[in-house]
Image (cartoon, rainbow, N blue to C red; front, side):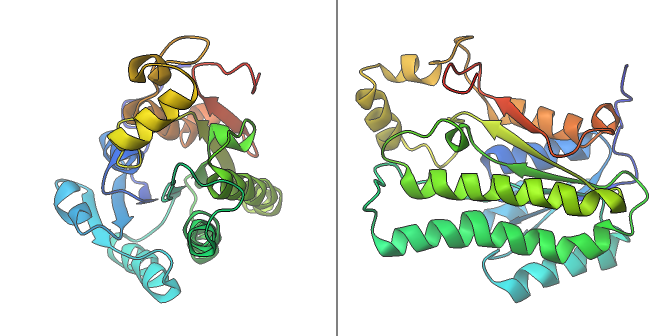
Length: 257
């Protein structure tokens, strides 16, 4: 089945964590595929990074319920509908073992899990009004099914949003809203992966940085653009009969397979 290059024509989408990395690439890809896209991020650069026809950014702290709801309502009021949401915003700190500091643990829960639940909660009333195969996509992580040492809070929250998505798929199917999760392995062209964090993780595996970037069965690096392309495809007609799915984008991982 071939898709039109404008598979999201007339749709309106919101992407969180859109100032850079996966979020920015996703916002741009959805726009290129026909949607009108608004990106949310606490980083003010989201405004200058997302500009042009059918693409804009709003500075928003997604852990602030009022700010998040207002950004969603503002988008619907301006563009008339809401058809796709992509819950991408999140934080990751390497070296966070099971005895992670309380403030770091709580921050991971607040941003990665609770804010995602609020994003869905405030968006669902608008998605239910869509007649364009409304879609919710949550960016999970390979850590959900194959966690590693030094990422306790991150791994736990990614498991949490995966369960949230599974329940949402069950509850929202009668309204025709699809809910799916993408599980990338580490995407290194993002701000999360500083040179220090990358070297530390590579050292833990006894690898060079370049070896670490491609430590999967296909020996390929996972990129923001690759994840963005999958997001757009899952939100489109090829996956119109799919909900509750968990789709890996990890180059093949023997612990996942």
